[in-house]
Amino acid sequence: MKSRMDSRTKPLLLIDVDGPLNPYLALAAEGAPEGYVRHWMRPSGWPADQPLPVLLNPEHGVELLALADRYELVWATTWENDANEWIAPVLGLPELPYVEWSGPERRAPLGTFWKTPYVLEYAAGRPFAWVDDEITSYDRAWTDQRHLAAALLMRIDPRIGLTRPDFDTLAEWAAAL
Picture 1 (cartoon, helix red, strand yellow):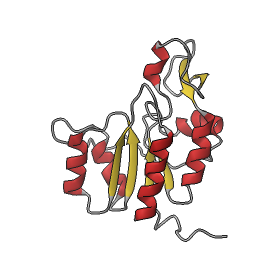
Picture 2 (tube, one colour):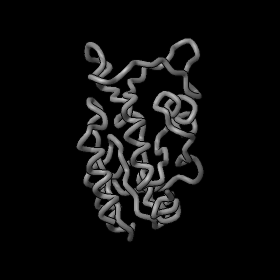
Picture 3 (tube, rainbow, N blue to C red):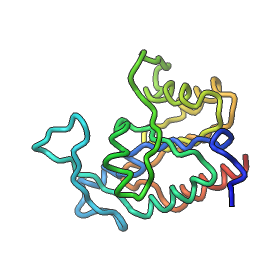
């Protein structure tokens, strides 16, 4: 059965890796949080002789695929296309489009996360939800002033990563549009 929404009418779900999917601050603690598995990765630009430890929960892939009925999934991570090579296969996700951080520098007011202007440009007036560990009230205010469509900015604790209530919030928000 075909979804009621096609990719042009679905809101975007902009997904950061480090923080929401990889609770990197938990790496300093003894062991990984429940459900997470430690992986050793070498994304572009990372030293070949020093693999990067990344914690991933395979259930996040299941949860994100379930949200794909309601959202167009997009990487919004400094991993850029490396997320398709290293993260997507571990989580069972297909290749996803991604926000490119290169190009002309976008300016945001003091206190606003550097990604925010790029995210708004990528969204191009479409409704979007964005999960990242560096979102603040400044980003929410700046988005409210400059983005006329609905936007849900969710700060995710980088010690914990995405949780069941976060996925519920994302599903409920999209259903309410």
